[in-house]
Image 1 (cartoon, rainbow, N blue to C red):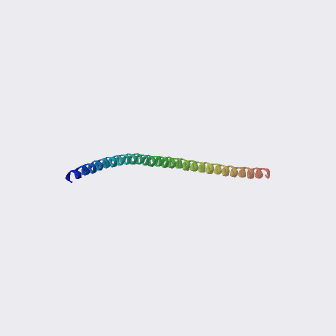
Image 2 (cartoon, one colour):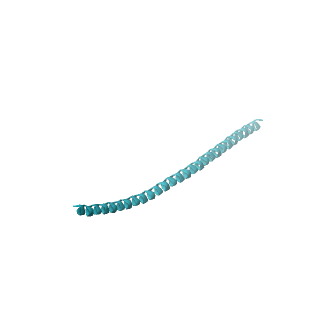
Image 3 (tube, rainbow, N blue to C red):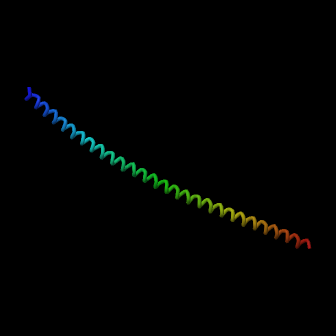
Length: 100
C-alpha cells in the first residue's frame, strides 16, 4: 500500500506544480493587461487635461475679443455722439448767423 500512495502523491504534486505555473502565467497576463490599461488611462487623463487647457486658453482669447469689440463699439458710439453734438452746434450757429 505504501508504494501505491507514493505515485499518487507524485502525480498530485506534479498537477499542483503545473496548476501553479498556469496560474502564474494567468497572473502575468493579467498584470500586463492591467499595465496597458493603466497606461491608456493615464493617456486619457493627459489628453483631457490638455483639452481643458486649450479650451481655457481659447476661452480667454474669446473673452479678450469680446472685451475688445465692446471697447471698440463704445469708442465708435462716443465718436458718433461727439459728431452729432458738433453737427447740432453747427446747425445752431448757422441758424444764428442767418437770423442776424
